[in-house]
Structures are given as C-alpha cells and as structure tokens.
Picture (cartoon, rainbow, N blue to C red):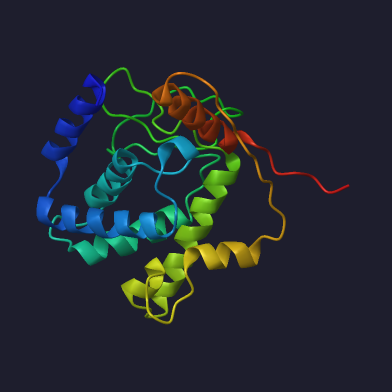
Length: 208
C-alpha cells in the first residue's frame, strides 16, 4: 500500500458513521464482484480499495443508522445509473472537485481523498466500464424483483454461473498463446501480468 492510499484509508475510517454495517456491505459486494469476475483493478475492473471508496460515498449519503442491506441496494441503484462519462466519483460528496479529467484517457474516474488527488481507476477502459454498469443495473433489477443474494451473485443452486452466461452472450473469441524463455520465473510472471493488464485497452471492433 502506498503512503497516499494509507492516508486515504485513515480518512475514510474517520468519516464512516457505522463500521459494522459498512464492513458487512463491503464483504457482500466483494463476494458479488468475485463471483461475477469483476474483481481485478489491473483488468480495468474494481479492486478492494475502489470498492471501499465507492461504498463510502453511499454510506455518507444515507442516514447514519442505515443497515448493510440498505448500503448494498443503494450501491447498485446509484452506480448502475451513474454517468461515468460525464461524472466523477468523490468518496466525500460535499467536497469540491478540482481534478482535471482527461476525457479520452479516463472513461472512469474514482478520486482519492488526500492530496495529491488522483484517479484510482487508471486501468479502466470503455469496455470494462460498460461491463460494470451493465452488471450493476442487472443486480439492481434482480433485487427489485425480490431475488435472493445467492442468485444475484450467480452462486445459487438453480442459477447459471457467470462464466456460462458470458459464453452464451459472446460468440467470437480471440486466443493468445504466450511463450517466455528466460532464467527467471518471476520475470516471466511479470511479463504475463503486464500483457494481461494491456488487454483492457483493446477497442470494440467495428462491423463494416
């Protein structure tokens, strides 16, 4: 963890009205992201600290006595309809936004708290933002329809697994085989991680 991230974490703890409800909601949402394959900052999705920042904003906009289920419901309702292209997320709603966004390079902006203020989601792409928004909207619709949490996460006994849903909704795939020759296995893993992180910038192909 960087020094700035540590200072952000301390600032968030001082702001939160109820740590018990917040931690329960955080664990539930982290499970959801993991089950849906949306947990991974280097792939353009959300990491643990991104989730904390997003949930903090929700906790600060709801009454202090809100329960974990209220935080989860409002999380999906808020970020499922969030205009990521136009709006930035600051964990502290009343704080004035002075960050200068580079629109073409930053399809998603989640801001840090302490100075220097920076965009925490620098690996996000337009594709990954659309996937997140679509998943949050679907989760909100399922909860509105009275679906159980296991079904929303995709882990219910009679629920299609997220991977099966993905394979059914996409018909074209690209397979990339990578070979590494060198004396260091660690270096090989670093190269693979670098390559995986760059795949998020692949643009949506156009049909002519």
